[in-house]
Each structure stands twice: as structure tokens, then as C-alpha cells.
Length: 478
Ligand SMILES: *[C@@H]1O[C@H](CO)[C@@H](O)[C@H](O)[C@H]1NC(C)=O
Ligand SMILES: *[C@@H]1O[C@H](CO)[C@@H](O)[C@H](O)[C@H]1NC(C)=O
Ligand SMILES: *[C@@H]1O[C@H](CO)[C@@H](O)[C@H](O)[C@H]1NC(C)=O
Ligand SMILES: *[C@@H]1O[C@H](CO)[C@@H](O)[C@H](O)[C@H]1NC(C)=O
Ligand SMILES: *[C@@H]1O[C@H](CO)[C@@H](O)[C@H](O)[C@H]1NC(C)=O
Ligand SMILES: *[C@@H]1O[C@H](CO)[C@@H](O)[C@H](O)[C@H]1NC(C)=O
Ligand SMILES: *[C@@H]1O[C@H](CO)[C@@H](O)[C@H](O)[C@H]1NC(C)=O
Ligand SMILES: *[C@@H]1O[C@H](CO)[C@@H](O)[C@H](O)[C@H]1NC(C)=O
Image 1 (cartoon, rainbow, N blue to C red):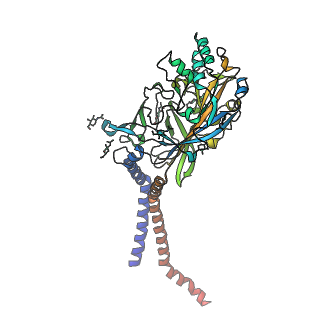
Image 2 (cartoon, protein in one colour):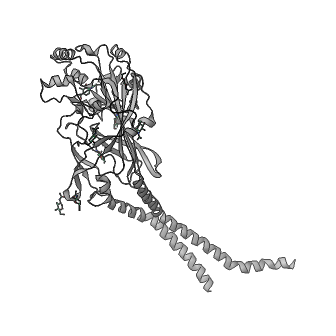
Image 3 (cartoon, protein in one colour):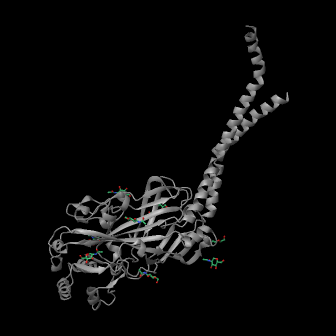
């Protein structure tokens, strides 16, 4: 009597546990609890860990520059294809703390500036900042493009001849990046005092910020965590950051963006491109043992008339600047600068074919951002961009010789970050814990099934003694 009572309670318990398990699965209690916990943690509030990471990112960010050294300037002037040799990397460690942090609107938004400091890393570089690079004279090309149709073109041309300005310059890596006094700009400054006689691809970028950003803290909606609300370009008139280049939308480089799904469009803001670009899911991978989704910008993200109206109407030969290139002239003070992926990866083939030495490949030249889908934390990222200059023969300027119309590659950069070991360990623990928590309802169901099996076995055992006795009888008789 007691025995069968025990057995039937096991059966009942099994059914109850099964129901509970199924209810837990259907009600999403555990995933919701987990999300709530993550929600509470990913908010920018003085004192939270997320705030500490956002304010002073622990993972080292490296900026690597690769230059294209022109080997045949004479032939290029005669109209032949330029032949370039890639040199580098010239690697800089980037320090990028948030400063002047001010919370606004009841803690739903936070304003800050993000100055970047670049420190040369000789051990991670091939070559030094004193290496000489021969490339196109960007200030000269800019001035010529500006005045090509002007009535002063001849005067500018005379000035250039007088000062021996050539289509090419040979300068050190340090000068090309951080600035040098350009003879032509210095002379033009006499006519236009507001002009800055210095030129450099990253001139005035060291230790300076690119204006105030306003971020969402995630307090109102955790999905907005660290998303950029506004960016006001500073009014300094350097070549690379001007107020016209207002950002539209986007998340900042290395931050959280909780609960990422494969269908998500990830908006990333890039002040180099003067706009936000987006990336879409590409593949699943594991970074330092942490599961991640890789997002990459789809090929149409660059220069497509809808995305960038400035590209409309720009054609080289039969091809229009429609695939893989971005005319950023407007936000580079009129300099004929065109951005692309390194080696014209994903751009029209003709651009790579116009320059000897271009070898585009996906692994090395794509921009990619790897995000842990559970927490939305960026575990690895590489932003890769190439700076090109548009050159063409201009009849008003003899120094352009017979140069063919082309998009000339000056250099490309790879700005990358990999999660630091300490954060990886913490994140790994969170992922592990989440896996366990998510699986609790299934474990409960498993327990129910197990109890059911035990119940069946017990039921059989209870019956067996009688049946075996009944069956053995005839056996014993024969
Ligand atoms: C954060 O709190 C610390 C100490 O409580 C204080 O010194 C600091 O100014 C606060 N920061 C902000 C941005 O409010
Ligand atoms: C801040 O909170 C107070 C009280 O909750 C409210 O009256 C006020 O409108 C809020 N201000 C903003 C800018 O949201
Ligand atoms: C940038 O500024 C920092 C601090 O002033 C300095 O240590 C560093 O060498 C500078 N980097 C470059 C490339 O000039
Ligand atoms: C680039 O080319 C110039 C001119 O040929 C040469 O002097 C220089 O050493 C080259 N730079 C590098 C880094 O190879
Ligand atoms: C801004 O981002 C949101 C998602 O965060 C997106 O829905 C919207 O289309 C974006 N707007 C622009 C102009 O890119
Ligand atoms: C331009 O991009 C938009 C949105 O990204 C897309 O819908 C459209 O098809 C693209 N147009 C061309 C010509 O590729
Ligand atoms: C780039 O855009 C500017 C204006 O936005 C235009 O004047 C210039 O011709 C364009 N460059 C090329 C190479 O098409
Ligand atoms: C950056 O990208 C280049 C190629 O584009 C690659 O050679 C280099 O290893 C990358 N750097 C890092 C730190 O991943």
C-alpha cells in the first residue's frame, strides 16, 4: 500500500515537473530575467562598470597606417599607370578616454568629448616615422582643382612654377600624417590670411577631440546604450573635420549594444567618412573563446547615389563612382579626397587595375566588427579605410603633364581593437552563466522526463513479481 502510494506520487510529481518546465519555456521567465539583469548593468551611470569601460576603454586600440610609395613618377606623368609599393605598418597606440563628461536630461543622455592620443609603437611597426614616402602632392592637387576654371588659374600656375611645385612630393611618414608646412599653401596664405599653411592627413588630430558628442545612457531604453544622439563638429578649419560633415546616426566604435540579432543593422559612425555607415550579419565565430557575430558593411554601403548624393555624376571613363568609393570632398574642405576600402576591395575592378600593386582581398581589407550577441559587447573590430586622391590632367596646369584620370591611392589605415584578457575572462563567465540560466527550463523538463521513466520502472517492478511467478510455473513443470 505504502509502496504504490510512493510510486503514484512519483508519477504525479513527474507530470507536475514537466508542466512547470514547459511553462518556464513558454513564459520566457529566465531569458527575461537575464535581459533585465543585462539591462540594469548596461547603463551609463557614474559608478557602473559599463560606465568605467565606456569612459576609459581597457582594450588597446591600434591605428596602423600603410603607405603606397610611388615608384614611377616619370612614367605616371607621361600617362602610364602608376606603380606603387605598399610600406608599413606604422603603428600607433590610441588612447581615447571620454572627457568633460556631463549627464543631461535626468541621466538619459550624457555629453562628452573624445580626444584621441596617438603614440608611436616601434615594436609593432615596420619602419620608422622618418621613412620617406613619395606620393601625390595633395595640397597642390586641391588648389588646382579649386582654381581650374577660375580666371586666376594662370596666376596660380605661375606661382607653382616659381616655387617648383610638382605633382609629387617625397615626405616622411611623420610629416604626411601629422603635418608639414607646404610651400604653396604658405604663399597662398599671403593672399588669403585665413589659410593654414600646414597639411597632414592627421594634422591637428593628436590629443584633440572632434567636437562634443551626446550619447544615450540607456536608462530610457537599454537598446540605446552608448548610441550617439548628436555630434557637433568643432569649428576648426582643418582638412579632416568640419562642421558641414554632420553625423546622422550611429553607435560609437567600441561599446555595448545589447541583444544583437542576425537581422540587425548595425549603425557605426565614422568621422573619417563624415557619416554613419551600417553593417549586416556575415558569420558566427569565436573570439578568445567568446561566441560572436561578425558584422560587415555590405558592398552597397559605400557610394551609392541614395546613400551619398555627392557621388552622382562622378564618372571615370565609362564607369561611375558608384561602387565601393565615396567622394568626401565636401567634408575635406574641397580637397578631391575619395575614400574606399584598402586596395579598392569591393570597388569596381577598374580602380585596382589602374594602379600597379593593388591586391584586394577580403581577409585583410574588409571592415569587420565582432559582437557578442548576448551582451552586445564588441569583442573585436577592424575599421579599414583607404585615402585616395582624384587626379586628372588639367590644361591650365602644365605640372599635371599627361597624367591619366584616376583615383590614386595614398595610404590606408586599419584601426583595430581586440578585447583584453581580463574583460574576456569576465565576459566568458557571463556567457557561461547565461547558458546555464537559459537552459534551466530544459533541465526541469529533463527532470520531469527522468521522473516519468522512474515511475514507469517502478510500476513494472511492482507488477513483475506476480507475472514472473505466473510464467515460471510452466517452465518448472517441464
Ligand atoms: C562620479 O563620481 C565621482 C565620485 O563620486 C565624482 O568625483 C565624479 O565627478 C563623478 N563624475 C561625474 C561625471 O559626475
Ligand atoms: C526630469 O525629471 C523631473 C521629475 O521626474 C521631470 O519633471 C522633468 O521634466 C524631467 N526633465 C527632463 C528633461 O526629462
Ligand atoms: C601625441 O601627443 C602625445 C602627448 O602629447 C605625445 O606623447 C605623442 O608623441 C604625440 N603623437 C604624435 C604622433 O605626435
Ligand atoms: C619610397 O620611395 C623613395 C623614392 O624611391 C625612397 O627614397 C624611399 O626609401 C621609399 N620608402 C620606403 C619606406 O621604402
Ligand atoms: C538611425 O538608427 C535607427 C536604429 O537605431 C534606424 O532605425 C534609423 O533608420 C537610423 N536613421 C538613419 C538616418 O540612418
Ligand atoms: C543604395 O542603397 C540603398 C539602401 O542601402 C538600397 O536600397 C539601394 O538599392 C541602393 N542603390 C543602388 C543603386 O545600389
Ligand atoms: C566630389 O564632390 C564634389 C562636390 O561635392 C564635386 O565638386 C567633385 O567634382 C566630386 N569629385 C569627383 C572626383 O567627382
Ligand atoms: C590590420 O589590417 C592589416 C591589413 O589590412 C593587417 O595586416 C594587420 O595585421 C591588421 N592589424 C591588426 C592588429 O589586426
